[in-house]
Length: 166
Image 1 (tube, rainbow, N blue to C red):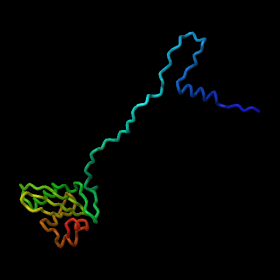
Image 2 (image 1 turned 60 degrees about the horizontal axis):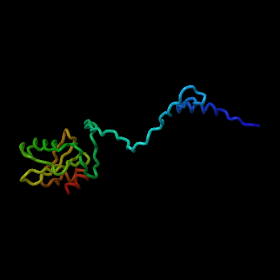
Image 3 (image 1 turned 90 degrees about the vertical axis):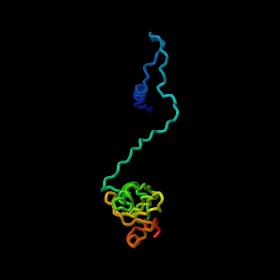
Image 4 (image 1 turned 90 degrees about the horizontal axis):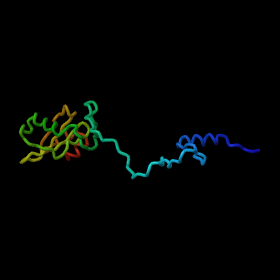
């Protein structure tokens, strides 16, 4: 009993169509032979790594989507609140003058809903500032050269207590 392979010619014809081969040119052909077609495989090119998607600037989250911060340690507030907001709060409370040129040397650092910032003003001692609340509605807890007040010692999260050294 002989076995016949089924589909052999069909598979060959399909492969021939997919790879673009045409009828074989024979000696009896009346047309002159053409030069062979260029290879269909691309030539090797130097390796180029895939391009990464562009980094888009992140939008500021809405007030309801503000980041939350751990209580156990102080971390950068990442602009929530911005230093300018802390300075504006202090100017509004007349802790620093309207024309005073101040810069942040530390922070704001956040732990829980509390913030700690150290500001420098030329010719003065560093001003430590402890605030509480959301950036748009900051509340001044205390400001000065020693911020370990009874309120800070009893209510501030552990992360703030650690950075103010209470």
